[in-house]
Length: 197
Image (cartoon, rainbow, N blue to C red; front, side):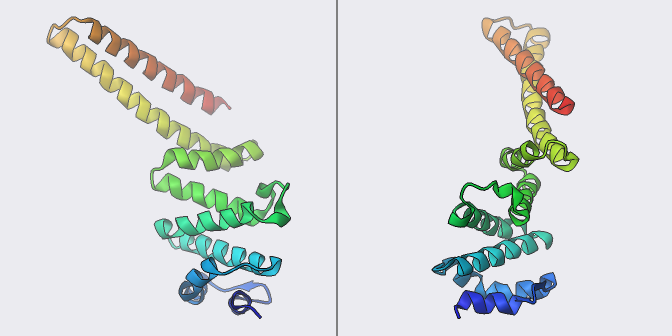
């Protein structure tokens, strides 16, 4: 029996998943050896993938987001490179879907909106009728649009201060104003279009 099988059997007795703190106490000292293990057979690969995925998800539930991210990435990688799953839509695998969801949620909370948007877009594209996926995707788009709006508003403020308070007229100020108006308008329209979808 391989070491991964021993760890797996100690954690999942009769497919029962231990409560979070007990699970983490068992897996924490073993996680590096699980990650580095040679996955010789399909059984070891399945068990390692499940252990790493559950470890990452449990860390996430405990609010240890930064610690969970690399393990989420590793579990996702193991799913995506599993030869048995080649040609299948991985989002139909509930654990894989949970990993993508959790990674997107963590990226969002860590203010990495463009990375979160990628994960939520995958989920929203697969299930466009799912309000939760749609709302989180739109929140990411909205955050990015808000940043553009603030940058554009800053350009417009510079223009108005220079033009009307300081009396400066120049071609550069004209272009600053034009870029600011364009960026602000484009981000507002983009945000409105996302909300309509």
